[in-house]
Image (cartoon, rainbow over all chains, first blue to last red):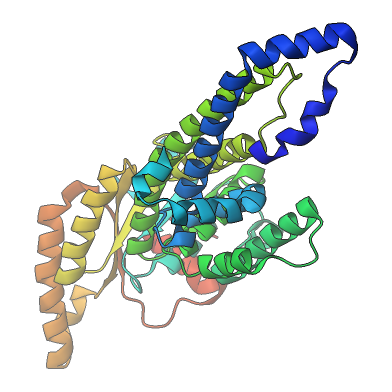
Length: 95
Length: 301
């Protein structure tokens, strides 16, 4: 889901008002938003770990229904795997 | 209480299950019960009685294909990426896959609600127990990921507000989770609903069977399966002792007598019916009727 963000940002209004609105946004909330996005993507990865963990050899108990979730996480699988296998401390990658 | 009285007294019990070790007579008892209930309800058997065997392997294959198709449709792919494909393939070998597929099929049939009674000729005990224990694990698992998903949603909303975007998209995964929750809830409810479910154990007069069944019964009780009683099958007619019979048969009858004592001691009044060993295989409507008459102690025509 987090990967879809760039396309959605196009909605901002133009003109002077728009400029000031963007300016305040940048000052006040941009950092917060970035942080939130980062946390959100960590959660996404945690979620895939709990549902699809057996892809990395971590046994996940109920396989029948977790297969239903697979189509929804297909685009994130590669980044998720890369990230999970890259972190030095495995626990770090979970949160 | 007799078997007939149970059905008479609790007409709401529409999910009837026979459990027990393999080869004790679950299938024949299921057939006889269906016959009896049809006769009692004055229902013509021929166009109204259906039997269905769930082909778990086939169902798993179809299901995997459905998932593949969904991925292809969702992302306009020509081919499933290799790592995804191998994951889907490997899933069929996962533990509990078969049991889950069977119970999922059962939910399909029951949810439609086309019939007055549903009689399950359960897979041998181990499988049913395995599924029940899976259901409780599923529950815990779902609880965890649903909470996580909700947290993720809160973040989505917060981010959307900060970036001044309109409504966040509907979370498809969350919907999927709710669906799974519902399915698992329904399937474990079918097995544990005290109002609608009657679970019967089939035992034979053999020491090992009794011991195993007792153990299984206590495990089923732990998962709140409403145990309605026991039906004893394959009791050799004691009158034969008055005839000139070979020692082999005499010994078998003695052995059964001991086991029947044990049944009496351990199961006592929860034994609902004693069915004798028949001299031919139970096959075809005629013998099923005969069996039903003995089981339910009632003349059926």
